[in-house]
Image 1 (cartoon, one colour):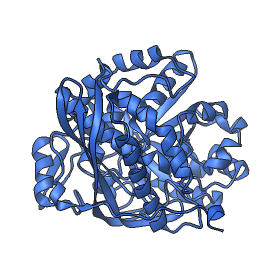
Image 2: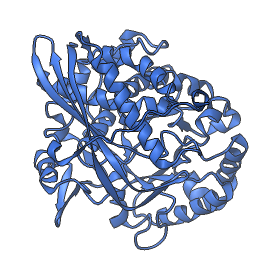
Image 3: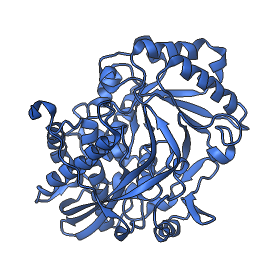
Length: 467
């Protein structure tokens, strides 16, 4: 049963997050960045009012990698995306389903952002965060948990934004979902992370016993090949089986460069420990080149898109180019993840290998990691990149009382470690049992009084309008 709601208020906050070690992916190194928080108040038809919340890092130079933009400019774009979306969502004063409201706003959001030279992937960030908070409030008002609520389609998700599907495809997919009790972590190895020895990729204290590893690439086939051979030697010493994925974050310039890497994976004995364990290669080329470059013979390996996933049509387009999968990230939109998971299930049922993968843009302990974990556990992601616990020291800059509240509410997800509260990893897995609380995967909300209001960015005028 779906509910109709009206949004009464949307407020934004932020808090600094300092990294415990540098995280280098693509061409950027992150040592610190703010985390944005969204607080919404909704009125649910015939049921009353409720408060919902969401959280996500404001990550520089991932959503928009254009070289002429400074990292702080790309963070400002994300703030503008939130503010533009707020205006659009509040402009709808009547009752609508949660997904219906998203569907009514997403086109205007992309258009309004484009007028400020903000690309579609950034444009999706604002609605993604607001949608999570609205869903949290809706589930709390209805008194149901995320998994039961989504199976009943309380948000009213349909196929209006995905022309290749029918409404029944979506409702049947959701009705058949069952929560995964465990989701394996995929340990990220950033470009600056240590490879060998103590603190290296095979150090169980470092990788938390992970059986899956995500290895970052820099787009230089000889350099990447040599580094992968080193990582492969280390991972071969693990006392258990493992699998790996590769992520280039758009750094491979073209198919020729990508072909050089794949050829080495296929032929170089030094890379056999990686090639034999490889599940897929993620977003190797820039998003614009991706759309113009069918994989051809390279599609014998499994590839997925991530940064190129900037619209509801992205997965069908990528599939036609030879890609097998697409990433799920709650910062790109929970509803798009559900639609893409529906597609993957439908296409796979027809005999084609298609899948949705769980990737993580450093989801932090608390709301962000719990909501993204719940989304993956709903749509069938059996292993997901989880790097927030690796690059940030526990709850980081979160007040101790707030971290304690999450530990108390979710004792299967967190553990006390000295004076820190950290993500609890059980034999390489995260447990999802405590995510079944009413609301979107969180029994408690953050301390709003311990945050600052969202920094107000200035709207950027496109160059052609400035001259």
